Length: 224
Image 1: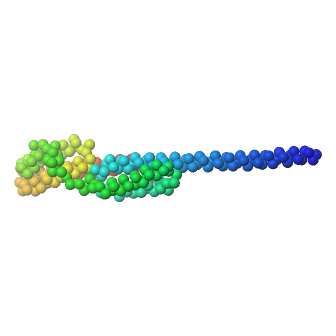
Image 2: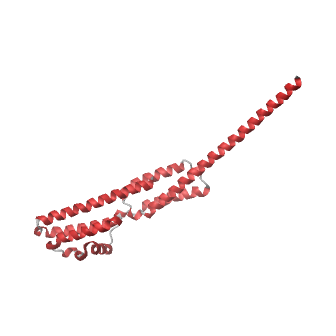
Image 3: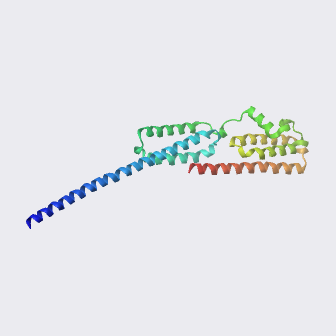
């Protein structure tokens, strides 16, 4: 009887030690995958962030200053998320992250699309492209003013699908030049000419607004 109790006690203690060791091993195994998952998550966030910064660098020449607050907000959101798990990054990734932040600051310091003056030579090329035989705006007579606006909008409709905001800036500049010339001969224009010209001008700005809205929606989708 006494011998049976001793054997039972030994078996019980063995089970306890075995259970404790298994629990410790299990705990260690659980902790390791969690840490690995955290590291993988922040590394993926960094890769996404790197692609996002590259995208902003690629399109900086077409980005306007009015768009920058939204871009900065998106930058802060992504950067803060990575900084919250910064210690889980490898040493190389930590350096990459800091370099990306510096690169973004350099982008912010660059002139935006609407801050770079239009180039005179480029204006002349665009005048030929959009006005054809009416490219010499200062020589357009009152008789041909309506036709010049029609020609302008015909070309805008055809070419606008591939335009950037910079292209619209040049077209807008040419439209303003037409407006100055129109003012010089306005007294000789008929009422029908005035109505047609105003309609064409309205169409131009409607098309531009629509294009800008599409670009904004596209940018939002890319930044998600």
